[in-house]
Image (cartoon, rainbow, N blue to C red; front, side, top):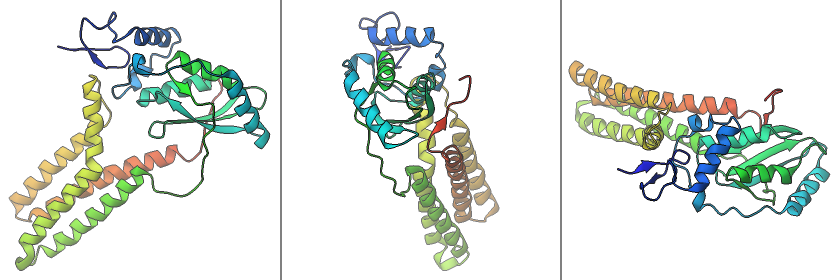
Amino acid sequence: MPLICRHCSTAYSADSGVEGFCCAGCREVHALICREGLDDYYRQQDRVAEPLKDRRLSAPDALAYQQAQDQLERQADAPQGSFTVSGISCMGCVWLIRQLAQRQAGITGVEVSLSGQWLQLAWIRGSFDLAGFSQELLRFGYRLDAKPRQVVDQPRLSPLALRVLLSIIFTGNALLLAGLAKFAQVAALADLLSLACLGFTLLLGGAPFFHSVYRASQIRRWHSDWVPCLMIVVALIVFFTWGLASGIGLSWAAFASSLTVSFLVVGRWLVGLRRGVRPLRGVKSGE
């Protein structure tokens, strides 16, 4: 039976590991995280990370970071910049990088993107050392690109917003088909199309919840998405049992199930929208 690395959660064989870790690099970073009081990282971790032995971590060029910082500070009174970060692989990484940034002198705001693999910082001119921060990130296995990202402000739908939109569309179609099912001549076709709408709603809106739970189970951790997963499964059982037992039909059961999934996806989107009102997360005193 393969063993699980205590840091990155990668599976490894007993003869290739190092004292509970897949490599010496993971062992060193694990010890560093615990020594720095950042072991909440492992409670935030929700998927397998890249082992330290597989990451390319060359020494940072202090001059390049200084030039980038000087350029950004010349452009604005309240300087900020966005940088690509290599090695971000899970929500634990997002949490850890945010904690490390908030410990830096002069930092006034920080935001980290898992999907985009970037870090956005705001700081007080003359109080922050970008080169020193890059060196700190390197100690934990992350590499900060010295060249700032070009951020283009243009409205676009996020993947989650697109999931919400499509889930609502298919749920609305399921409602229309449930209304058509009362006509005997098209009832069978309406039932079939309603089930198809439910399938698309589950694929677009429900599957990501199950994927998160499955991914976390691979590293033997619970994920908070097990609650919406349970709600979806219960909704399917209850509504289809009710639809078949009461004779109301499959169309209404499919619509009710689709509506449950849509509510859950909309709720997730609203939570994310509330968290993302500000472009940067401010650093609270004492953090």
